[in-house]
Structure formats: C-alpha cells, structure tokens
Length: 148
Image (cartoon, rainbow, N blue to C red; front, side):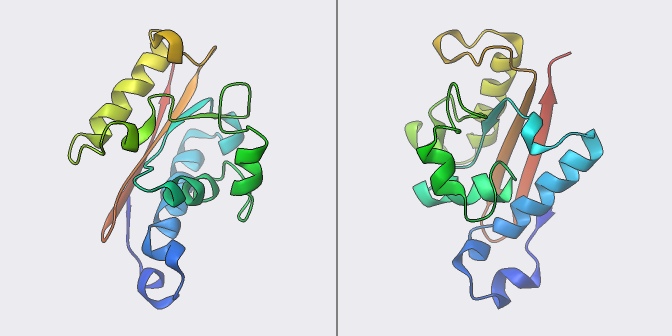
C-alpha cells in the first residue's frame, strides 16, 4: 500500500493526480517482495474507474513502458492471447463502479481465475494474478495472488 507524496500535488502532471506514482511504487514493492516482474503476471484486475485510468495503470504497473499504453492496447497485449489479460470481469465500469465493493469484486475474480473456475472468462493456465485498487486523494493497494 502506498499513499500520495508531494509529487502528486507539485508535478502539474494529471497522471500524478490520478495515482500514477502511487501505483508505480506499490507495484514495485509487490514485485520486489515476491521476486517476480510485470512480465510474469497472467491476469490483472485494475482500477479502471475512467477509461484513461486503465491506460495510465498499464504503464504504472509496468505492464508496458511509460508512453506505451496505446501500443499495448492496439497490439492486443491487454487481452486473451496477448501478454496479460486485463479485467476479465469487465472491470469497474461494467459493474457500475461499486464504491466500497470494488476491491472485493476484484479479489473474487482473481481467485476464480487462479482456481480455474472463471468459466468463459477463464485465463488459461493463470498462475500469477495482480490486483490494483486506488482511492484518489490517498491510497493505492497492489496485491499479488499465486496459484499453488
């Protein structure tokens, strides 16, 4: 878990206002603690409260280089058959962005993925799953799940 730093308010960069550095820092802590990298992740549920947040989060989580989100999507690297399946649940917007229940819904999806019980949404062979949740004006939580 991370929180806002002075850069959020001093940088004059809209990406910072919507949590770029918080997400980047939280993800790096998770990768370092687990001894994995973004290239090892099979499925991600990320906080796509707005369409642009999904793109910003791809970069912050290290799923693509900074500035590479458009190419990541155009190349299909964010979906089935690509590098990492993102939001197989449909994401927050498909659920009406249920405030307070967002994290639980993401957790449920990722556990189903790792158990192999996600039906038509199943990411074949999913072993590592990453959850990204954020509350603007305060906190970002990134959690890694592993099938054992």
